Image 1 (cartoon, rainbow, N blue to C red):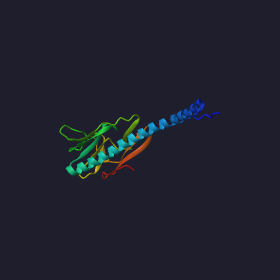
Image 2 (cartoon, helix red, strand yellow):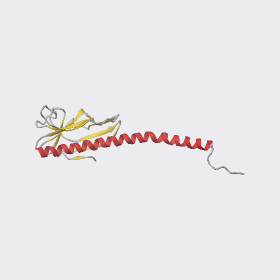
Image 3 (cartoon, rainbow, N blue to C red):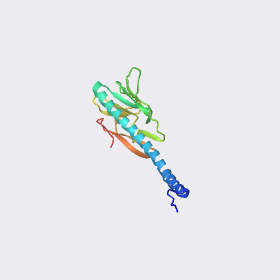
Image 4 (cartoon, one colour):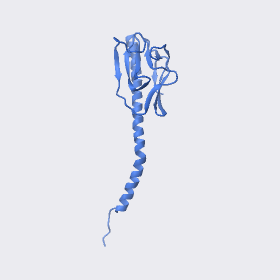
Length: 166
């Protein structure tokens, strides 16, 4: 008598069924992880551009603003520009330093938290103010990134203009 080695068809089907069940639980988690990583990457990019705007304001001894392309949601991108009149609007003749418009993350937002307004402007000393387009500036606070409905991360902008991701 010969002994058979290998697996029966039933054993293979049971293993494939178990694999299918495990994969069914894992795939949604992987897509959520990918979305969260894309959100964190966009937040890191925004933080870097806010720091860049601050350094440019000090270097140029002029106001530099960072504004969302589609206010108030920053997830569609933002622009950094020299803003000598500090009105938070890219006027004709003002120099655009950076444009970021390559984020497309479904069901995500990066929006001001609390009473922070839409545009962040750094003065010639690197001090941050924020404003609703054209309104009086108020003390800068923070931007919150969410992936509906839970907050993922925040960017904190201190009154002195320092940018941190706590």
